[in-house]
Image (cartoon, rainbow, N blue to C red; front, side, top):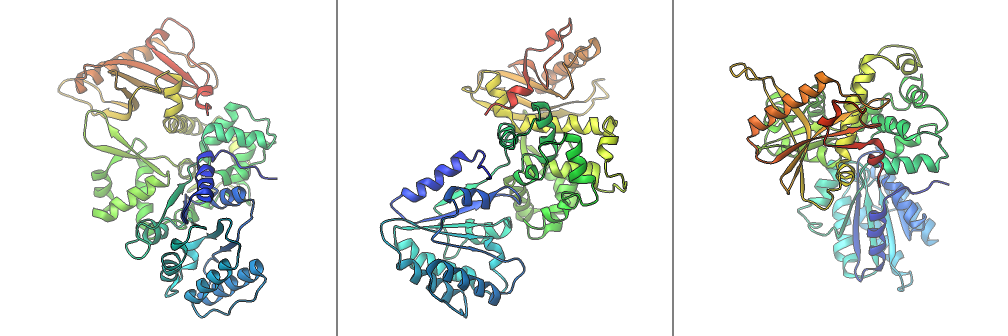
Amino acid sequence: MPVLIGRHKECEILNECLTSPRSEFVIVCGRRRIGKTFLVDQFFNGRYDFSFVGKHRTPTKTQLSYFARELKKYSGRKYGPFANWYEAFDALEDYLESLPDDKKKTIFIDEMPWIDTQRSTFVSALENFWNGWANRRYDIVLIASGSATSWMADNLIENQGGLHNRITRRIYLSPFTLAETEEYFRSQGSPLTRYDILQCYMFTGGIPFYLSLMNPQLSVAQNIDLLFFDKNAPLRKEYDELYSALFSHVDSYLKVIELLNSRKSGMTRAEIAKNTVLSGTFLTTILNNLEQRDFIERYEIFGRKSAIYRLMDFYTLFYFKFIHGHHSKDEAWWSHNIDDPGIRSWMGLAFELVCMRHHTQIKKALGISGIGTNITTWKCSADEEAGTPGAQIDMLIERSDRVIHLCEMKFSEQEYPITGDYEMRLRNRMGIFKQKTKTRKAVVHTFVTTFGIGQGKHSSIVHSEVTMNNLFDN
């Protein structure tokens, strides 16, 4: 039987809804494949007073017919046919009023965006149901869910009509952490090591559905072949549906995604606007929606008031690197090319992103969880006149006690060695950073690696280190 992994805070919110002295309107948000329906079904154990799932690309008349059928299943009485959604919600009120008054009545409407077909009156009927009846009671829990981010934002979260400020609880599901991903694999009886699970995270990003497609008894390489290179690989064409299922005006979203993929170190809003010819509130909406769904992340630039946006979706990065434009018919391509320099390069970049996503675990490992911090990035161009090279630091941890950690993130199969040349590069980069930023704070090198730093005379450049095991901290 499937087991609910993590989601402890989300379950607490749902439990609070059942014990609160008012009716609750809850929306469950999150990207496609994140487990919204699974969370609600598992928490309530499928025991609803009424539940309905919207049908994809289905006309209103058919949706209403299914709604009437579900009402009959729950109530034992025949309802319908309904001429419109007002009649459907009136019938739902009639049924719910027949139930005992001693407990909350739970209604779960899933894939709500699919119900709202053109000229369907669904949203206005929902407004009438909530404002005119449910909100005036104390015993209703209405849970709405759907992957279409644009619809959920426009019609529920930012509704300026009858549902304005009517949402009482908002649950947003994030991808699994490494700890939760490990918990998932252990629940499947998988023998994968933490090093293996880390690699799995690099192409799944902790998305529960992607993890569920993996065979826990196969190696990482075998699973990648199965998911991406096999003749019937289930994730090979996922990109074609991933963004279109979430966003209206998807072409504009894809412009931003493809642009950020071409600039792995990130771009400012001004640079994105210049290269996509998108601007104003429309671009702001796109960036906000992509950030809220964990596709991109915004990082402040150290010492400046501006910020960069960086593509952080592991699946998308994997797709562009190895699937888009890939025409090989080798169904075991990954296994046959495991030592390819391109794969090693991708692993290095992916490990950096894993570390950036797990900065909370890094701070805990450094013993600075209780200190105020700011996670930033920094880079500078080469100065030909001064004769100084360019430099870049993907992640800095700036502490309120006037210490700055320059984080180096290195993926390797063994302890990471620091050579004399590398030590000198680190010292030069630190010097450039201090010179350009004019910081008066203490600056130290922190290494985040898979298996630690190899001991040697050059390793003294490292002030503090964090290993892969620390990233798995819950």
